[in-house]
Length: 325
Image 1 (cartoon, rainbow, N blue to C red):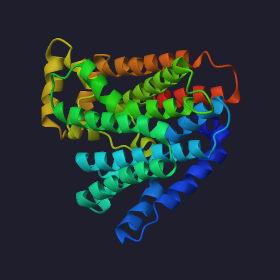
Image 2: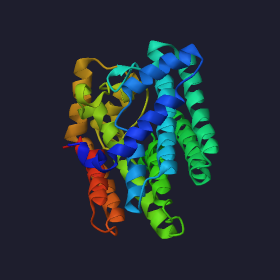
Image 3: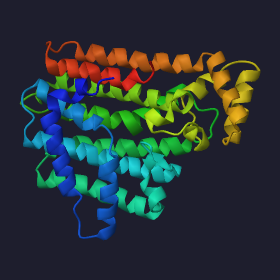
Image 4: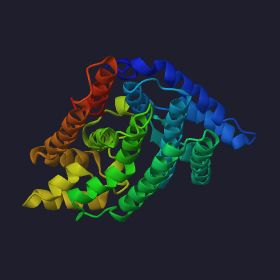
């Protein structure tokens, strides 16, 4: 999709976020500067800060504090990705080498911790107490999500509800928090129903986004997604397509369980697994659940008056699931 549909209305504010990020990464410590250069060169689309800025713009201007909060959200997201790559022993992130692969796990852990501490230091320095309250809870939820993911690793008995608990905590919580912060500025904090509505909007977008991301393991093109096929399976992540297939009666469910246990599949076994998922409607089922969350996000957005900013937020919902089309 045309990404400018999402970011166009806040392009100027996002440029300010970029400048702040570059300044925050400056350090007298050589390894931090080296990793910073790599990180700044490999960052993604800044989806979370974009949502924060757009929601804020619905209520007025995105002032200095809003831009600073958007910068903090991106730093926390980066820290989580670096830690996640280290835990998963990932080699690629967005098609480029991960920090743990270019350096080692020790450096990845240190840099992730540096970023988390930098994020909260900036909130203190900028007196961003409402954002700090939200993001402190979000950071805790993200850690719980990581712990749950580890607990359910390789567990073929994991339920759909448990899977949703993982992705809501690990992924959707930060997107929901970003939207909640955006809805809390420009004198809108007292409208608690509206703040909750945008927190829900972010939660639904985040759930749709992560289900879609998990589908990439089976239907994605690594060149366009930056994510290697089969990586989730190798790291023991039992995602929604697998959960659906495991509940099917007969030999297909048992065969999926056997392939999950093996983890590293031959090309023939991989094609067999994808064929089983397709035959049982598991990929279609996961796709439908992602689109159901996208519909919920649009319902949460519906009360807002028509505007270019609302159109951009609607396009952000398209982005969360567009790669399924």
